[in-house]
Image (cartoon, rainbow, N blue to C red):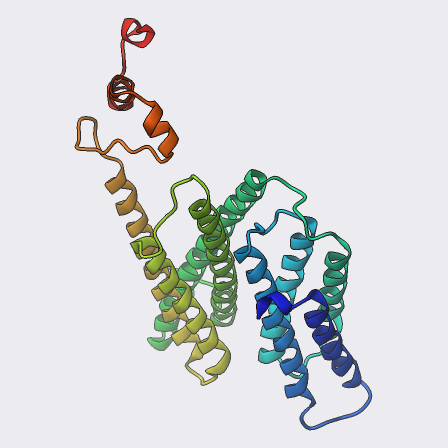
Length: 317
C-alpha cells in the first residue's frame, strides 16, 4: 500500500491545510480547526509512510537531495502539528506550512535516485545521532539543575526564609520557564537522536557492520526515557493547576534520573564487551568466502595478534 503513496499526496494535504489556515483570517467556521489539523496530520502520516517505504525498499535516508528536503519538511510538519495542537488560537501555520510545502516541492523536483555514497549517508546519520543525543543530554541536565533550584527556592519561600540570607536563587517564574523549555527541547533532541540511531542501526544490519540488537538494554531504556519525556511534556501542556511548577520540577528531576539510568546501562554494556586479554573469545569471520580461504595457521595468527602483540620476527613470519 505504501508503494502507491506519492509526494503529490501529502503535498496536496499540506496545501489544503494552508488554505484553511489562510481562511482563518477572513471568516469563522466551527469545525475548521479540526479539519485543518486533520489534513495536516493526514499529510504527515503519508509523508512518514513514504519515507518509511523508501527506507524499506533499499534507499538509505540522506543518500540523495530528494531525501534531504523531504526529511526537512517532515520535521517542520511535525513542529506545526505540535504547535497547532498546543496553541490552536495562534496562526503558526501561516509561517510553517509554506516552508513545508516549499521544501516538499523542491524535493519533488530532485530525482529520487541516490546522489551520495552509502558510507557518506551512514556517517551523516551517525553524526546526527551523536549530536542530537548530546544536545538532549544537555537539555535534561539543565532541566535537572533548574528543577532542583525551583524546589529549593519553593521550600525557602514556604518557610519564609529571607532572600538575603545565604543562598540566592532566580525567581520561581524564571525557573518554571526553564523547566518547561528543557522538557520540550530534551524530548525533541532525544527523539531525533533515537530516530537517527534506528536508521543507522538498520543500515548496519543490512551491511557488514555489527548492529546493536533491538532487545539490548540500552535501546530499551532509551525508548523508556523518550516515552517518559514525551509523557512529561504532554503533562506540562495539559495540566494547568496552581501547583504545576512544582510538579514540572519533579518531572525534570525524574527525567535526569532516567537519563542517568540509560548512561549506566551504556557503561555496563561497554564494560561487558571490553574483555581483558586472554579471556574466552570467539573468532568470528562474517564473510563465508574469507572463512573458506583462510587456513588454520593464518586464523591462529590473527586471533593471537588481536590479544597478544607479536614480536617483529613473528610479524614478518
